[in-house]
Image (tube, rainbow, N blue to C red; front, side, top):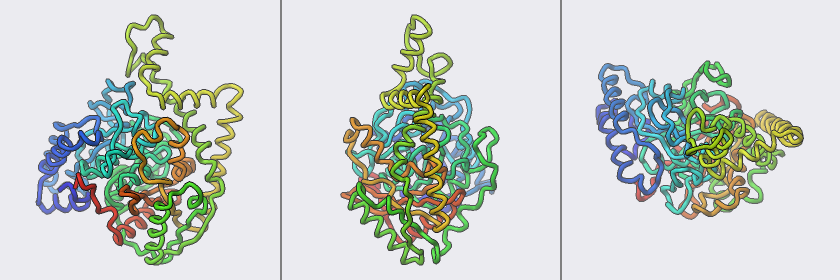
Amino acid sequence: MHDKTIAELSAGLAAGEFSSRELTEHFLTRIRELDGRLNSFITVTESQALAQAEAADAARARGEAGPLTGVPIAHKDIFCTDGVRTSCGSRMLDNFTAPYDAHVVEQLADSGAVMLGKTNMDEFAMGSSNETSYYGPVRNPWDTDAVPGGSSGGSAAAVAGRLAPAATGTDTGGSIRQPAAMCGISGLKPTYGRVSRYGMIAFASSLDQGGPMARTAEDLSLMLGAMAGFDRRDSTCLEREVPDYHAALDTPLNGVRIGLPKEYFGEGLDAGVRAAIDAAVEELRGQGAEIREISLPNTHLAVPVYYVIAPAEASSNLSRFDGVRFGYRCENPVDLEDLYTRSRGEGFGDEVKRRIMVGTYALSAGYYDAYYLKAQQVRRMIRDDFARALEEVDVILGPVAPTAAFNIGEKADDPVQMYLSDIYTLAVNLAGLPGLSVPAGFVDGRPVGMQLIGNYFDEARLLNVGHRYQQATDWHLRSPEDYA
């Protein structure tokens, strides 16, 4: 059962081949037996999962089932879950039990999905390798010496290791797409505002976006259909009808214009990754897509712009974690300043502290105009690059990351090299566009992902292109040998 996609599991449940309880017990057993190697879960909600599975079976017996009814999933531990620890991968929130559900959690629960637990992640979603978690690094199922990518590395590893059919993630600068690519699964970062951020612990509010991670583009279409929707509790969530993302998956690609940014295929791109992406392009060309070269001239500015704006917003958002109201509190503070200083110093990890300090500096008097304001101006230039390109083409295609997964510890002492692993994904968040990662091959046994970028609210087209590619290839069907 664990090697089936959501679509296949849904069909099996509908046909009575197995019950949701049997399915849920199967995945809980795999988590108990296999996750010790991966460290992909922080919390497993076994009793709650079994209760939800029984409720799903009852709903199906009443004829009230949808495509996700009874399907087990996992949630990234950045989404608040009522009565369940929500740690955000940090010591700061190790003792925090959320008093309410995030909108994404509500939506998926209403769809009948079963929550297996909460997945490991880079602390406060700050990282590209899932090595900054207070609970230890997550390991890549394809090679446990390798990182799974970050910050949604726990979700990616759980799906790749067949410990869950699907999981939620969040993407601030590539944190769904990059781990999906490195773990050989599919991941979608929706248009900013398509999925509510209510109950999703904030890192950088103008960049954060929740999205689905699963085996296939088809599964992502089912997940996004449940996750998306207007939520008045999130002022950035847009009131817009949610289309049937599944309906257009099989549309032929004849005449679809696909642009290849020349900036994505230059220096720094691994030759093996380049070869995999070139082969994917030829497959899409063979299906009738028109391939064109385009330019995104400000691509090289995405990294410095992101690492001014994101830390600045993080500095503001994380100021609430002070040891007073909730979360970690130091022992025996002598006064209020000592309470603040030691609670934050002991509760936050090194990467979070680094970004808070960078962000505070960028927002400080005398530097705001030179750094933060200038970064926002360049952000507009990056967005305009995409707008011009998407007048010429329907979809932009390139690699997700310049290399396949690197070894655990390889870049831990070099933050700049770590940040450069997101060079092809950051600009998509700065522009607020949707981006999709689908498996496209391997380099030395480690997966490679192809990135598809579309216009605002054009997730259906991205999923269509991704699905048609997957209908002609088998990269997404392959399983890590030890988890097959």
